[in-house]
Length: 233
Image (cartoon, rainbow, N blue to C red):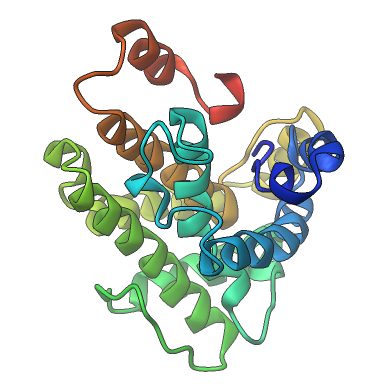
C-alpha cells in the first residue's frame, strides 16, 4: 500500500509522511489502522469533486489520472467496505486463532451482488458482507472500463475457492506458529485480510490496465503486469 496521493492536493509537504506511514506495511493490524484513517479522507475528496470517482473513470489529464494512482485508488475503493463494518472485531481478519471461524462463517454465507450494503451489527457476518461488496465493486469497475472479461469471470466463486484452500492451511498442525514466522519474515500468511487485499490488488491492476486503454505504451503495461503492487511502479 503506497502513497495515496490525495495529501498532495492541499498539503504537498505531507505527501511523503503519508507514504512512509502506509508504504511497506506487513502487519495486518497496521494495515487496518491505516485504512481507518485513509478511507474517510479519500472519500471526502471524492465527495467534494477533488478527485474523479470512481478512479477507473479518470483520464490522463485528471488529477491522479495515471495508471499507478488508478490501480491504487481502485483497490482502496474496494477495501473501503472493511472499515465500514459498524461493530468491528478485527481479530476475525487478523488473529490466527480465529481464521477458521471467520472462513467457515464466510463459506456458509450466501453471496450477494450489491455494492450498497446494509450491515447486520454482527461482525462475523458483516465482514462477509464487506468482502462480497468489495469484490462486487471491482466487478462494477471492470465493467465500466471493459476490462478483460476472463479476468472477472466468476470473481465471487474464485474467491470462495481461495478461502477453502486457506481453511485447509489453517487446519494443519503448527499453522499459527508458521503464521508468526511468516509475519516476522515480512511475508503474508493466508489471514483473511491478506487474502482480500491480494484479490483486490490483482483485480484493480486489471482495471487500471483497461482504463489506460489502447493508447497505453506497451512497456508501461508490461511493467504493470510484472508488478505485484502499485508501489513497484
